[in-house]
Image (cartoon, rainbow, N blue to C red; front, side):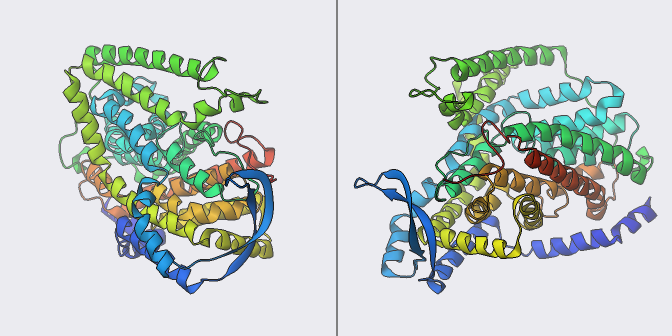
Length: 531
């Protein structure tokens, strides 16, 4: 085993990953990085002040409302290092922060998820799913459950990855293969799910904000913009992850010797009859909530349907329902979580609920702090017209290169995957990339929904091989319970086949999806025709 680990550590790819880690570890904290980026925008606006672009802008009436017509307008970059610019930054610092589009939806959804997580509902549900299936389907079921765990934000890292090792060890299989399969599902499949998660409103808000400045685009990028594609992606990630585990990972790791463990290995506990009863009661409440949600969206007289006109498509009639679906997602987690907490006596009164909600918000403190510099960056980038001019120059460059359509999407996936090795946060990275690439690629004929889904693929597939993954130290701790001297090189080597296979398989599925012109979500087509 020692020789095998040494050969893995000397592998060229592992050495390359160590070099990437060395570079990445020199980057400042994301909060500091956003402040530096915002400051960079200020300097760039001063350097490029006066650079102009000819763009199409909406014509406004005397009251400042759009008339539906567009006219070619000369737009120039304005410097923030002038008296007017400095005053604008000073007066708008708070509104730039509170106006950061993902802030409100993310915090609200996390209130519901936090209650479901802290009462134990999500953990017991995942345990019951994984432990009640036939032995030959255990790998696929584990990965599927791990993909689905993204609905609980980062809970899957803490719950599912050690559970994967326990299940594999209990079956006499190598526990590191269980960790690899679970890690691939939780992190590599973070942008796949049968349900909408907290990530959907977070990314959609940034995409929508970036897309609204494109002339001729008067639609809203909905929370459901990628839903159909994400449903199919759930089964793709499950199939690819299962194939890689059986074909590459377990043969590479060989047989596991329990004497390598650093402590006695316990069998995973089965849910007690009381836990199972409480779970199914909570699920019954979830069914009631789901039925109520569907009534609000589908019932013709519902206040959450379009109140005026006769929409051509059913999703247009349900526009109000979809526009604030994050509210309904919150309820779908909050109410079953509340029921389960009352049944298992973790919630005895309203103070317990308030404390759980407070603990959830406390865990989101880092995100709130990050939102301040991120909000400044986005506001600066837009106010100076850098977004418009950069998009115009980028389109000119892409036209000169000759890329368009599907090759352009694939190139964007590769770029996102490379950047993800250095800059891990999905929302933070999209807050940087979205304002630049969404307008640029829209002007090349791609819909904002297609651009967003390409970003999500690139962001997911390299999650499992970046040394900057925040949960990587925790995963190493889990692994050392079963192989006491395992090193980061071995972990990354195990994960590399998952990353490569997911990147290829997911990209091919997107190519087929776009080529066939299938909607990515309700009413979300892959290509765009601007007015």
